[in-house]
Length: 79
Image (tube, rainbow, N blue to C red):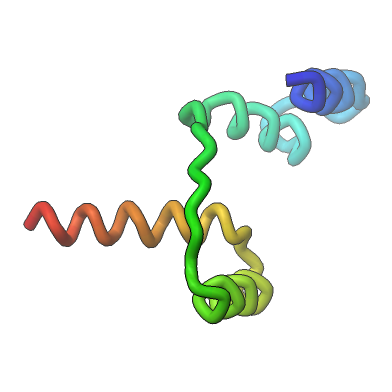
């Protein structure tokens, strides 16, 4: 929460304002995200390595990749 406030004050303290301010847009996007709950699981080392490599190659975070994969899998199961 402290980091969020620091970023918010940094964004609001800049001379550039409005929707063209990328830092302010990031803060607004972050504030609108759903609350997150930690999920601790043990996975095979090879799967972890593949996920890390994919994250670097795609420019995404491991967290975002895992969330997308879980959402996709659950969506496919409900069909």
